Length: 63
Image (cartoon, rainbow, N blue to C red; front, side):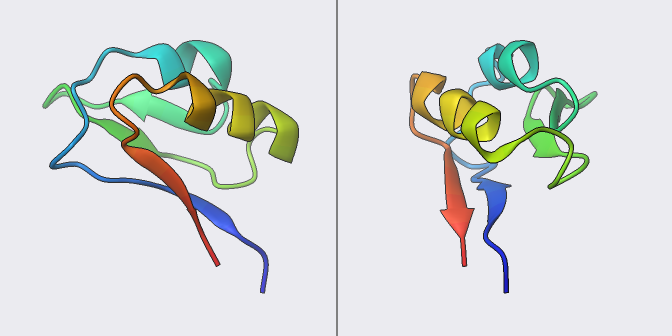
């Protein structure tokens, strides 16, 4: 099973960095919280960059 990115909605501040880095994978929804819209939308390195860019560490990989 491949790993997939997940967003902890309780931690997310909706800053939008993940969406800027990996726009095919993440978006900030109408509630101002990031969500995964396509777990394979970007390559793994780009998704990892988005994870690393999150200022509150709200995004992680799920095995």
